[in-house]
Length: 233
Image (cartoon, rainbow, N blue to C red; front, side):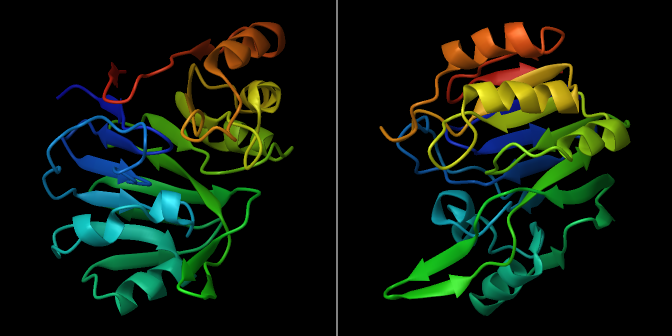
């Protein structure tokens, strides 16, 4: 099967692995830029980078089957189990977990993480990113919501991701210039911008990211996906 990454707006992606595994990341499928599409078939894996609603998204609705495994940091795991999801695996930053033929490493992100229910804030543990190593050995990196930090160089050195999904929107995450510096540290072959344009406050643009990459990390190719568009890699 072809390996594919499909963008669904904001930070939501579906990865189709070598063995045709369906892996969703931060599945907020009702985001303002999401394509109109029928609800997906139950995924094989769902990865949650942190607890904010624009990343937990439609997890609870998508993951009611025990055949779908959700992977998240421990605090989010406990929250989702309490909501009745049947198959949720918790891990923590620095850990590696192999399931269904793919290997997941939870790596740091610099961001907050919490759940707001009515008038209370529930701790969501730490925000994270994921390195996903597919069955054939190819590694992908979804940075989650994050600021730029120097240890991104270690993520590049240790895991050598071929594709990096990088936030560029600014205000709540890195802006285009910082995202380009992140790519210089990580050294992926391809960078896919995310977390931009969903709301007016997210002012970072694909054009600004592309220009910054050309200056700061010219060996990294930017591939901007429109919501609903797919990259084969």
